Image 1 (cartoon, rainbow, N blue to C red):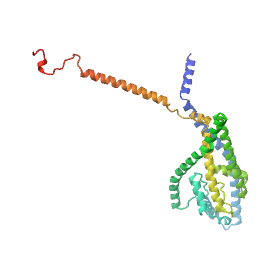
Image 2 (image 1 turned 180 degrees about the vertical axis):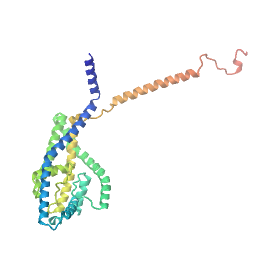
Image 3 (image 1 turned 90 degrees about the vertical axis):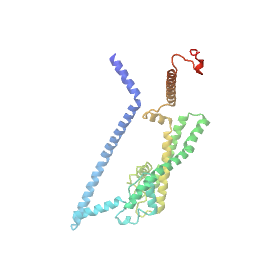
Image 4 (image 1 turned 60 degrees about the vertical axis):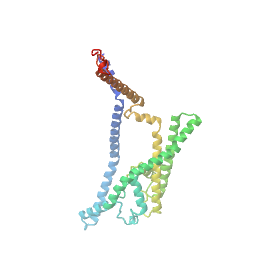
Length: 335
């Protein structure tokens, strides 16, 4: 008997706090996913890092042996200076000295990566004035970009998602959730083809050192606004039509980001995903519940006010009614 009561109470407790349990499982799953990613990245990339460190040490040791007049301290200072400059996008190599990082087209590309929060990191402001302006420019520009993207996506969604789904639903009489799922799938496939596969093939042909996988990797890292900066187009030696190429990449990033937001918004409007999201959200008060509460409060306060009014009237009138006299002559005792 006690066990059945305890089990029933546990079931009631879980059901009453179902959203909290779902949210806790979501947090736990996210933490486990982070740990899983760290373990995989560490196990895959750590051997390559160790191999690269060994190769660099061997090259450095061989260089010092061939140049005995150069001390290791001077070489360390030189390499540190070169690496610091490389982090700001300035290369010491002769074949890369022709590419400028802050001409108009490169600055336009940098501004687009800042406002879209992609941030490749291959170039960064060197001066204090540039860093200050970057802060002010980002504070104003990032919300402005979000407003711009929201307005554009909202208008595109009307013609790309809502009207086609409603037209097919009313024209063919098909189930609206089914039509929405098929439409979202086809839209995602079209977006992947036009903004991942085809651009990856183009980048692999224009960039000498990129294969198709690296080009596809760049497209994904860019349009997902991750922006690692390990692959940046237009930075090759003697790149043909570099200015026009940079402008084209800027346009591609803006259009691709808009298309990705349209696809995500299309999937977010699916009824199945809405139900899934509701599992982890706090429940809102229903309008009917609010109306009932307001009506209950109104009735309660009205009854209280009526009782108070009746009590005040009882206090104002005595228990024995006394007739009001117009003049002293009306009193029968006096008469």
